[in-house]
Image 1: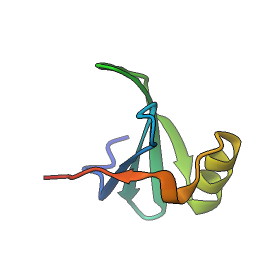
Image 2 (image 1 turned 180 degrees about the vertical axis):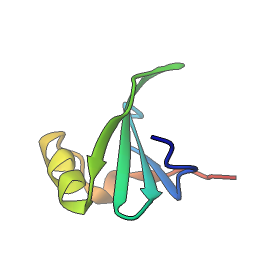
Image 3 (image 1 turned 30 degrees about the vertical axis):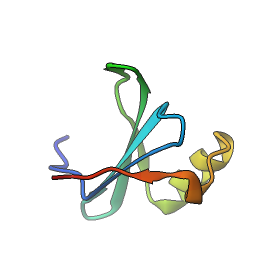
Length: 71
């Protein structure tokens, strides 16, 4: 699956997670665990409810996410 380029990217405050949003026929999010220069394979979440559940499980508040520049 090649969703193209992300339309938005966020990091949590501790830079342990990177969240990429993709606009496809539905909204998809790729979650990467990051540790310095390495990162995991993506965990794909489909839709806003799935992202909301994942953020709650990880105890990440929306206002703590940092927007990453895409340019």
